[in-house]
Amino acid sequence: MPKALIIERENLPAVVQGWLKAAGLEEAEQVELVFTEREVLLRRPTDPKLREWTNSVTDEYDKAFRRILGL
Image (cartoon, rainbow, N blue to C red; front, side, top):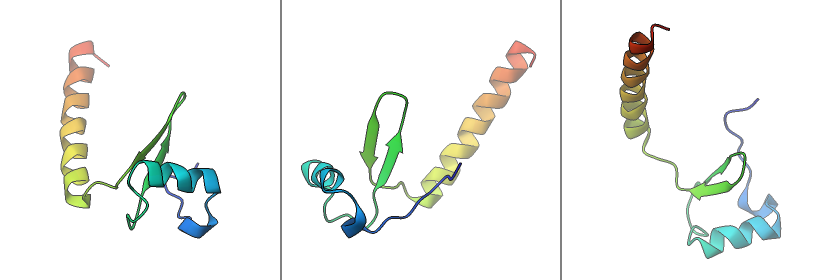
């Protein structure tokens, strides 16, 4: 399963382009479309350095949680 897929804006279906416009993201250089079980999220990508930091923090919480549960 791909973690990222790049699609040029003009190749997006008109309905998705409408979503971007409604969310004020029509001029954004990159937009993430995140598909969950019940919704589609539109967002600007986070700064790579911020994402790296949050991943390290999340990893620390995961380790502590697993240690507490004995996993």
